[in-house]
Image 1: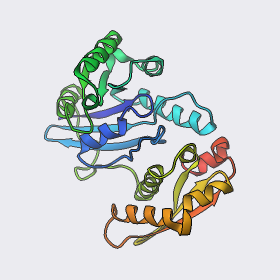
Image 2 (image 1 turned 180 degrees about the vertical axis):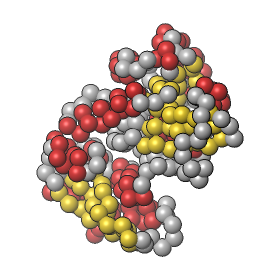
Image 3 (image 1 turned 135 degrees about the vertical axis):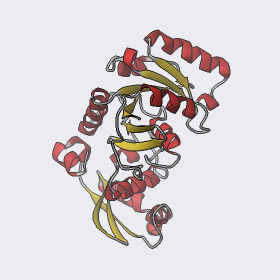
Image 4 (image 1 turned 45 degrees about the horizontal axis):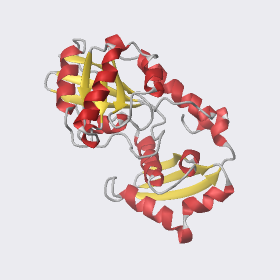
Length: 279
């Protein structure tokens, strides 16, 4: 039996959360086309006949412009030091650049692996060029992959199973997502909002469940300015209605979601507020 921890690190929007979901064959981490969708470490467990692979999804490492950005960067970098195998994820559709190198410099690439994701969106020649570029990192292994189609995922899991330390399972056999239900609901609400909001507003939104007594769940949506509150609510409350409906469809039957929008001026720059929101 082999078991251990595997982190997925990289720039924002390279598909780390999508890889995690593909490995688990279910959604365990929210995804969107907005950078910095993931703000905290998300742990999920892949159970195989002879292995238990515990994935740690991390926020995209970027140049921070807020205290929140500094906090999520620190979260991602800490995850590099606390696992058995670190996987650097890069985007097959984008040239290997300074941002990728910045992440690579903060991990021991020679003991880790490199994943070139989104190969379904790039011509073969471009994928080969990207693989040639990352080959200079001298990693233990390289995996071309498409989290969207699943291509390359099983090969990656087979390699991890063979190279993780020998050991007993670390989590119960029925556990896939470590995220508490309260945090999971809050993240689902934020995911739905990310899909509907434009420009800078998604980065000003935080969500947290303040009451959870099944089937009733109350979730606060925090914004930074009064002008943003109306945008999140929508005309006649339409946006909140759509979000609530979409989240309910992802929960057990009978869930009742109450969404409340509150303003917390400049929360992204205030450490006490960031911690209060769980980041």
